[in-house]
Length: 532
Image (cartoon, rainbow, N blue to C red; front, side, top):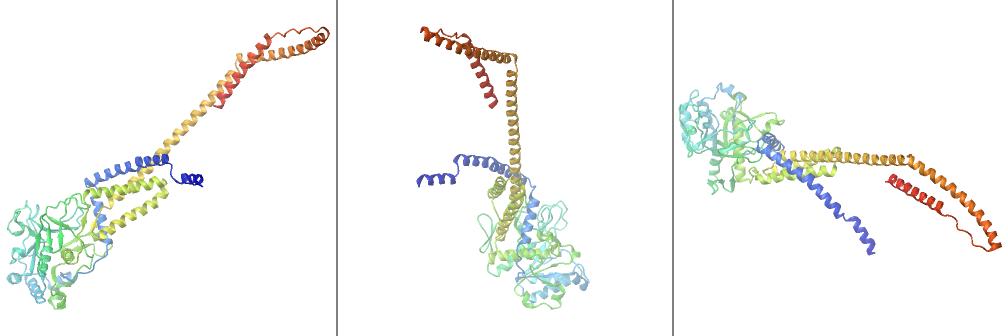
């Protein structure tokens, strides 16, 4: 029983020698190729060549995520094209804006945000607007920060500095709005500044909160939550910690951010917030309960105002390609409140070394599949499944607030697999070529040996030896005949005389045997060479 069992086990267990050779081949082909491909991809990433593709992948994850629906804590009073026609005003006059604010105050909202430029008087009612803004401390007015090419735009008159927030939205290289700044500082402008104000005063101490952040802070104050600063310099609101974007966070090569920015986690493409029109509010067609204790934002949604921006949803199939600025601000406010009260995580990222390991791991996956399968027509569907698994893994992490690399590991998987297949094809071609050359050499050697044997057998010396051998055989036959006759006669004579026979001469026989042995050696040598 022991011997058969040992024999069976030896057939199941891998041969250590073969296993070691396979392991060396795997390391030399897959691991080294994965390292080279990963290094190249990281180099492309650090050079910014993959940023656009990674941002598009981010947009795809945003569009694929389930929508959260409207945030009941917010309402947007939109100024539509119909409102402009009804009021016969563009822009909306100061008097109309003042009447709107008075009507909204009747509904007792917790905070009101005006996302309308009002740095200069528009129509009638300037004094009335200033009075409303001064008397109500729950109103936040938007301004535009100064930049290199812009002198900045001041907020509506009568609003104290603590109730002013900038409405600037940072745009990426494709002009889409994916980020927002919570706090920023006006930049030095090359354009001459005619009228200094809070939003064009350049100083490190002049840290201004954003329009959306100001509204969120005002709302949270009603819940007893005030902003705090950690030892690391991070903003903390209640249990929520807001970590700013770094230069190369997520798929960014360079955010270019010099302020406190976070990624925008959009709630929905079109139904993120409840919308009511300016005319409906003025005509008292809005349920007061809809606005009570809410955050109300006022802004244009009319397409002619040109206050729309592309977002991650812009590449999708939604009816509206761009999103009004006031709705984007509402989404940001909702995100901040959800982070504080609903445990909705901010979008987080891996450190650089983790992302590199992630890319390398998927490169090894692609190389291993190609090394095992070795047939492109089989690898294509299997590789497609691997890409689907990668996308699903990234998507599941994204649903939990994580933005991990998607394009670089996918690229690493495909490129490494293709490289391993090419290396395998090249190795097979080299092997077949060497094998063919060896076969030709063997054939040439055998032909050469046959030719040499033919030359020997057809030479005059060999023919002469053959002739001599034939003569000797004939002489031997004659001698044998003579010997037999001689023996017969001698026998008779011995019977008669009892005399001893004379010995037969041996010289011809010795010569013949020498020739026979020489011929046998030559034939044996020829046969051995032919068999080789």
